Image (cartoon, rainbow, N blue to C red; front, side, top):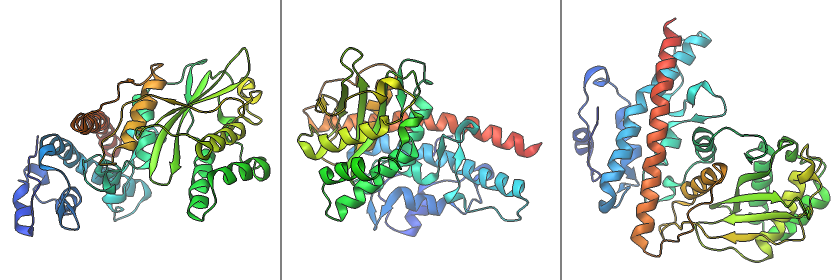
Length: 341
């Protein structure tokens, strides 16, 4: 059932008029909370009027799956012998019962178009989308590196930047002082031909990185897919070289382990560009990673027109919400089936 509503409510009465409850959901007291999340940020509408059609479709899909999170909370409480379930707003659903593919309502809210940082994809959603959409790893091909220690490195880099430590200084520190304690490269499959991972060169921007080793020269190559144009200079290049060295250090993958990552500078690859609204870096990074994991390069066409860039971001958001909705539909059936046994 499609639930339609507008995007300009300003009073509690207008919010109540947006949504017409029906069936088993008619007494669901949680929808006021959900509508607030979908419609308001400090009493301002979330979306541009011109984007309302696609935004409405995405928001409708979010509304459709709200009961699934309540079902999951109820099932979890039953399993643990609790009389009261946890708050559904913070409940996590593992898609297809896969513990590495998980989402919360907060993650889904970030797919709804917005003019604010609330539309920045969460880190968890970015990784879950990759695991949901990309084909399983095949020996000799591209491997998605989501090791927690890699993210620890990125978080440390962000903190050091906030404290005034430059990226280059961090790279040296990582290499010279922390290398024996940060060895996520051990997770790289021994037969992987290349790896893909998300990187945060600044605390509010994501790019996609492809790294591989030339068999003939054993030189490591780093390629960047950045939806905000090209990065250049040592502030990005040197830390990534150090990071790849640490990722490869003592790796099971002998090609990565024996590579020289300091000889070749990181290369900027042409890829689709996000709009000046600066809310789509996560969605574009996911799209680039998905293409690379399918053994394809992202479309090199750079949209010069601002509206074309906006439209591309909206299409990607709807595409991923549809995929999540389908997976959540199937998962909810499984949750209810297991709970009824």
